[in-house]
Amino acid sequence: MTNDSPNIPFERPESIEALIDAMTPSIYENLKTAVELGRWEDGSRLTQEQLESCLQTIILYEAKHVEQDARIEATMPKGCSSEQNPSSNSTMQ
Image (tube, rainbow, N blue to C red; front, side):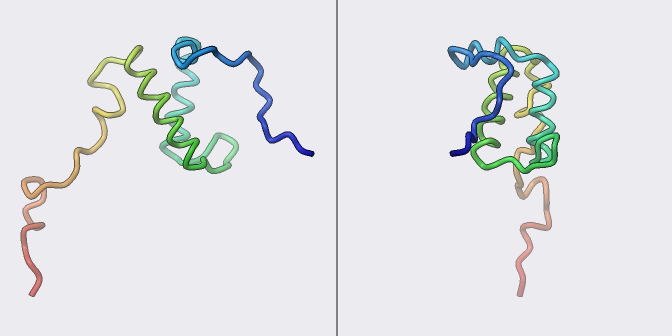
């Protein structure tokens, strides 16, 4: 029987708040990079579950430690609109 659990070099936090409080800026940056690239530092791909967990953790960390205008949601595109892209109103015939 194999053990698929990662070897964690610290005790697991009791709550998500404890996890966020224990995070260092370096861990935060590593999570952001992993999400941006879709890969961990060793090159292995993030699973969908890991991606979602990382994004949630980043957002919670930023809510406590990052100014609002520098947070991930503030830097993401807001979507497409006809005002941003006037050619999207043209129709094909």
